[in-house]
Length: 157
Ligand SMILES: [Zn+2]
Ligand SMILES: [Zn+2]
Picture (cartoon, rainbow, N blue to C red):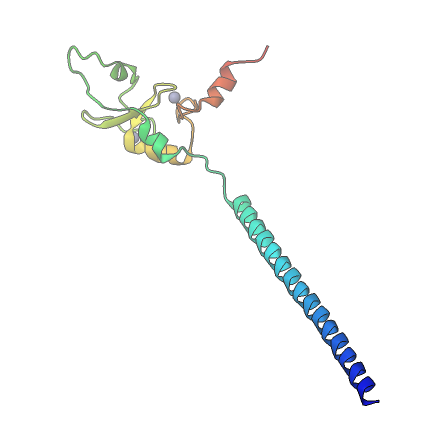
């Protein structure tokens, strides 16, 4: 009698421990799933935020400061007999088209390689920070990416 009772108790204990183990496993699995879901959700939200921030960022119209700095500069000389600098000859007027003040001798100028228009270095640097074209003729100021002038000159047949 007592033997059989004991046997059945052992059987029950075995069964319940097995059930407990299964429950523990499923709980652990649920936690894993939850953790996985939270990680995926976190990454997704981060990506959404980044995309929203990029969408709200205004497009940059000006040139890169490195590109502006790479544009040729020269010191303006009014009339030095026998000067053969082509840059100075290309300077059509002695007035800066941006600030409309007369260019004085010794002032540092910057010319745009695509159209050879010249300006005070400080004036054109400020202009190119928010614009990518020449303020006189609207040619692309970026010598490395003259896409606009190419599009205007090379017409498809
Ligand atoms: Zn100027
Ligand atoms: Zn120009």
